[in-house]
Image (cartoon, rainbow, N blue to C red):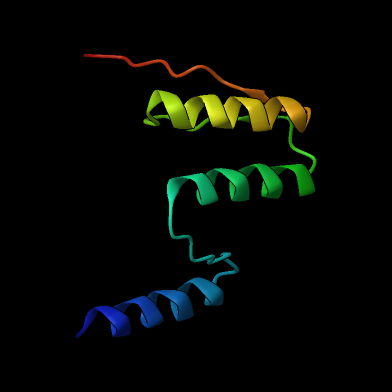
Length: 78
């Protein structure tokens, strides 16, 4: 099965369980989408581990301007 067929199958299966599928081409677009989605749902806390510092700063600014708090990333090693 080719990549495009797998993507289409994933979209169909996701729709069947009420999942939102939104195609995003870059990290900055994903950050904006996450903040917008959380703002629409009136959520106040967001976390996004694994971002580089530039993207984390951008997310922090968007959260602040949207009235949300960005949780600090904590890493635990066992």
